[in-house]
Length: 137
Image (cartoon, rainbow, N blue to C red; front, side, top):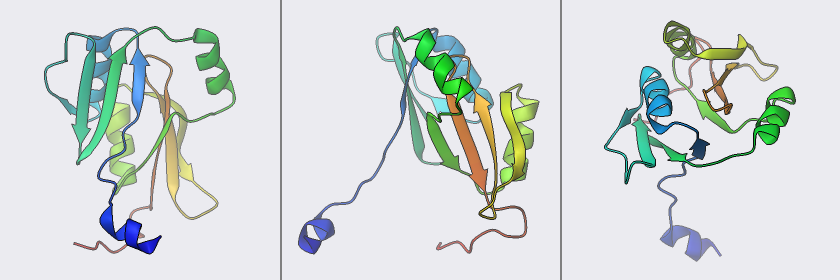
């Protein structure tokens, strides 16, 4: 089994969000720092931020499911952030809908939740300033 592991390496893993209005969603994520190329055939776009991708697809979704996920804090995505406090301030300044404000977790990090225009809930978390993990650069 270890031989198979040495031959493969996951290079990306991106959520795909179904959205009601592709342009609106692209604009929202651009305010958070994502960049987008031209949408493919007007219904699909890939955003990039710090080497990570987010895929947006204009397609129908189920409103009741979105509401259930929101009421029970079911995350659609979770992201780790270096400089969590600064990113939180950037999200507030961009007008992001904050569902849960930045606060310490029981495991020594800080996190907050945002909700995008289509009801997706994303957790952003990281080590507080002064407690960042050493970089492997």
